[in-house]
Image (tube, rainbow, N blue to C red; front, side):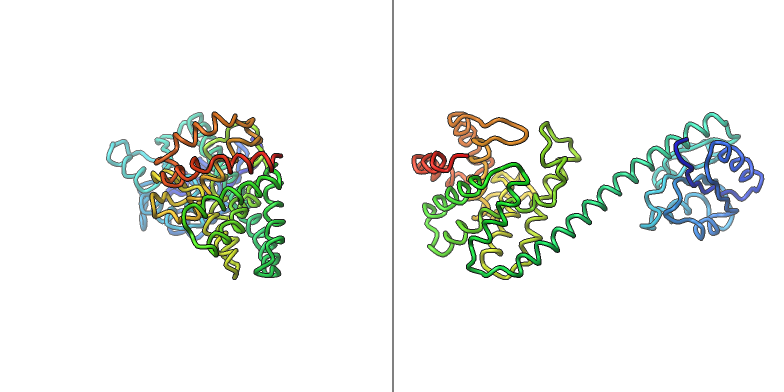
Length: 352
């Protein structure tokens, strides 16, 4: 056993507690006994790694006990093994419904007890690792958010150069270049102008679009810079950058920061509703987000990233066309291709 784990044994028969305590102690665990569920609930806290509970007990039966465990946020993740003589299918289904993880049938078989407890303890260890990672991620985001809040509070609303430097810092973390945010801003400006937006809105989008991925500053480097395909869990963490960015920028007071928050939150939404973080579709997606989606994807396709080499212009344009009406606003894709010469000129002039 790698380390001593803490186990709560609940049974109204003292000799059953003594039996389980003797076996589990020899297996290297720290065992605490409780003569009924009420006493057990008084003793139980997040320091425990596993609960072994009888079903048929006075005062409160095992089903009610497990329900109480699952209702408490302090204890809801602790695995529970029911130790019972009950063999009816209905009883076992009820145990599963209230939140039991496994069963051991009386009389107890030592090999079965060892196997099932080790399995549940491994499960608890994995859950603890996940919780620790989520806590660390939250703490890191909180810390970096506070740092960015201090930086943003000092920005003059018209100090566009400072905004661009802040965006460049986030992009460098992603192994992109300062030219990426220049191209992104210029592509967005063209699409905004040709969409018929007023001059002020075009300027806001042009200035704020580089902040689209600022939330990546809250993504761990081992995920952000991973050269291969992300796992499902890693992809969920990566997708959180949209919400992180929106949250960071929501603390600003300028029109530029407000626009940046809208873009950060919406530039990964898709016209057909399959995007993230909110699954918005069609014109429910803010127009600045739809504009920046086209600009960002084109630049991503034609640029080198940690996980891929750049696609050719021909291949990239083919992918953009395929995304019309699915990923992208159809009218914006039409504008994109109507102004392709200007867009390609910007790409060539701002090459990495």
